[in-house]
Length: 237
Image (tube, rainbow, N blue to C red):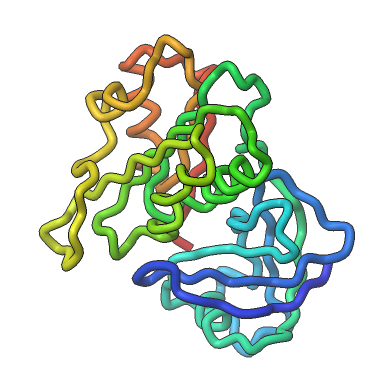
């Protein structure tokens, strides 16, 4: 399918959101991803012109949106310099990191950095559709400055009383902002403080590979079966 670039904006230090027209007939579930391909880019490199991105837009939005950390690669340089109307091709949607249907079991999201993107889509979609799932989102970053969509997610419980946001920062000594939330890495103590294991939550993990592996190990040691863990790794492309 073909699409065109609409606009972009910063959503955190070093992280930008890019909006595209939604092709006619395109549908997706919150949490899914697309493959985005540059059409006739002014430069390219050995990594190619296609990248996978989770959609941060909700299925009901009349546009598609992605968010990404900005690195000095040909693909990211082209993205950053786009003008409205630039053409792209997309494939998808892909992936099954989507919200389970059993509303009696809470969903616990563990996000690190840019791994927030699928959970942003799911959380906003749940609020818009007034889903009855209990959702608890743990979101880990070095500093508030690095946390994409932080203010929006902190206020989302006002729209959805079934949604709980637990932000945590691991390096507040490097921040110039105030932060009254959790500090330190997500671990069993923090998890058990906010999650009642008696309700048998289903866990979703998204972030860098090392973070995903550490979270799975922590959950396993906390008595969570792999059958109740769903993951998605984000590389640093």
